[in-house]
Amino acid sequence: MVYSQNMPLSQWESVRFEQNALAFDNPMFLEQLDSLDIGRSKLAYFNQHNSFRDAYMPERTYGIAMQAERFISVKNWKVYGNFQFSRYEDLESRFTAMANPYRDNPYIVADSAQADWRKQYYLLEAKIVSPAITHYIKAGLGIKYEVLNGARQKDPRPLDKTLNLELTPSFVFQVNEKWQIGVNGFYNRLREDLNISLQNHLRSQEIYKMLGLGAYLYNGPILLSGGLSRVYEGNTFGGGLALGYSPNPKHHLKSILTYKHHNEKATDGTSTPFKAGEHVFNDVEARISYSINGSQNKHSIMLDALYRTTSDTEFIQTLNTTTQFYEVLYSTEMHSLSKAKVGLDYEMLVPDNKQNVKWLYRFGARLHNLEEEYPSTQSRRSLSNIMGKWGATRWVHLKKGTWSFSYNGRYLTNLDEDFIYYENSTSTNFVAFQIARPNHMYNTTSLLSNQFDIQYTFGQFKKYRAQFYITAGFQNFRAMESNTHHINGMDNNRFTLTIGLYN
Image 1 (cartoon, one colour):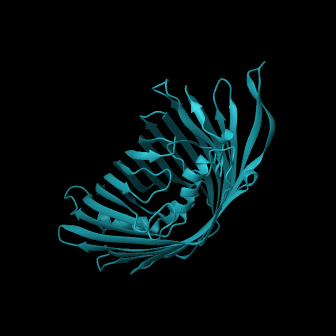
Image 2 (cartoon, rainbow, N blue to C red; image 1 turned 60 degrees about the vertical axis):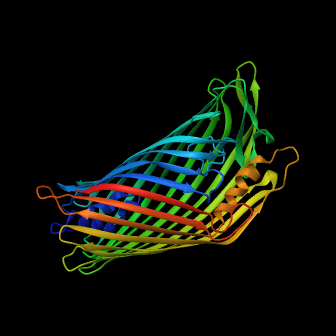
Image 3 (tube, rainbow, N blue to C red; image 1 turned 180 degrees about the vertical axis):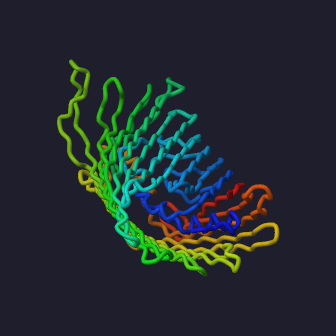
């Protein structure tokens, strides 16, 4: 691939279009890059108002975000690097004492306060493919490091920090000019530290330690008068097998099949640790893409599928007064969840007669199915929905700059849903009625999303091969039906202003 005659804008869009290899765990397909050094940096301000929201979503979010990413190909090394940082505030968040309550782990902590959160997010990511070790073998490595910090300045006061480290070592075997085989390992290390304190110790606060669908520890709130600490520690091991086929230089087939096993433990306290739960999941994921880099139009089609099963264990414990440690009397699986996702996406990039980008068309569909059970309370829920996506971007090249106009739409409709929860006479039923049921209704409500972006890219600098750009974006998505928790027409609006540089 050679883009030396293109402006940085067109080169970036072409490379980003062709490098759907970033969606694969194994970085082996990056080796198709040739003599390339192109990147993009941007700084954005965003502001979002939510009236259509689930039990955890804030009423408003605003903040800044920056990103710098780059593709480099030098001396047979192929490298992609990505750095992201965002700092933002969630105003009037509800029912969550954690910075990210959306993980599949059911052992999360909630409270009944509406309060503001201050959050920071960091991401460092790299995908690397080495020069040939032998005539047939190359090595690759994927690295990802994430940090999410969140704090709330209202009793009860959570301070939550999550660290995520991911490694994907890999090897690529060049069978012949057309066929490639890749194998990769996968390791992820997760640690989340949650500490909750009180400023006013004279007034106790209610904390809910959730267990599963509508269930929580002791069937009632925990009255917090001092402090609370919890640690989540998890490891994911796995690997994948990738296959590449290029019948000619313009046609590329990429495929991968991966398996991952995750085991995560939640522990309360430090001096006298108490097992809060054990969360295990198994993932089987497949991804296939086919791209055609024609002299006129470029095409890309991708099929991806994920199947996850979870098994969540609870413990009956007693405190040994001699050792001052809790001892497990009994443990069993109490909660399970399975979900399946299948997606199909098609994109077409159309250049003009000078090989600058002119049109980009996008179409796609997603099918999602979920089953969740908590047998001891006879609670269960299920949902199946389908989402369609469509969009287009048009670039208009002028003598001294380029305008681009982009639209993206999606429509989600529910195919089937079920939510069964029997009230517990010994419980306040707070989690079921304030969190689990509203979240289920939110996830099964039909919605329509429309997003518009307009960008102006200035002409190329005379002394440097770079272009400065400014983008304004607006997104609206709204409920398209009414239920017990949402009204038809409820919507969320997000505005984004971005300045950036292609270089």
